Image 1 (tube, rainbow, N blue to C red):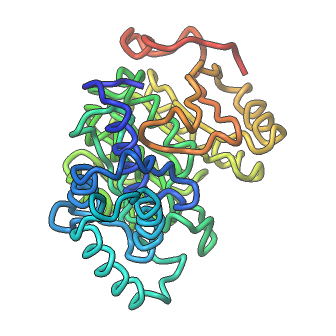
Image 2: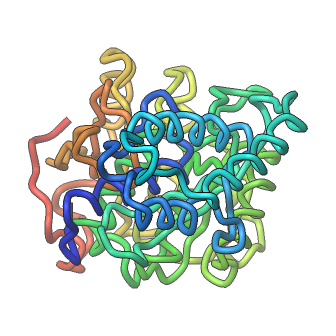
Image 3: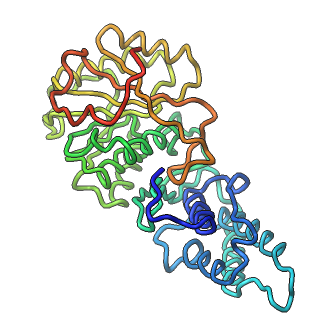
Length: 358
């Protein structure tokens, strides 16, 4: 992970804590700074200003979530107070906690289905590191027949790769994302990676309406377009402007759930590749079931060349942003029509290594 500018160990602990808090990581699993780190008055003031002062932050986690984090943080601070005459917990920190407590009690019936702003900070240790804020339900696995209500590990993993080593795939290119959900990857590409044009698609009208809100929330409405696209449905006769764009790259993350969806997915891929002769696809997938992945790779083998990319695995204790689970392996694949017919733009092939073919 890039370290620019260099941070001291104490600063690093505080910054990682801030990023995990804004991403609403599980309060029981967050790496809280050591008590020696947060004991100094300057550190406590930093926490207030950078995590809990609503005047300084455009988007805050929910009151119930913040209450759980602050409760643990204050218990660490209390344990650090060894000299009652010299050591004290900041009045501002206590005041923030009391305000959050009152709000959390009002919101006690907060539902796991409730959507809230989750801010993803890129794994670049700079004060103004790129961010993407997504309104989502971070603790909800699925709702209303869709898994598109939260951002999943495969998207965060692919986003980490793109922003650290894979910008060449995105910059000055036209992109189409399949199964985009709430839009993390599309917004990242349009907001920070220099994409010329991004079409974000999903099969759910409801999810796409939420994704459009996230497009506006991140100020990328002039670059990122949303539309509902059901796999297997042709759209050749439509007159929408986006359907006449020559796309350079298809993006997809965690779309391999049900093998019965693969025939429709293959029809959509064949349609897209037939329209853009230099098209490539970059797909990340969590390997939950080897048989499911093998079924997709076998379906691809009839029409496409599939290459697995050697993307670094950032273990959870090494991650500095776009935090994601590494419990299950995540693979990234580059899919093209055939090895001899990939893009003539050499820049799109730089910066990765191939493990082999699927």
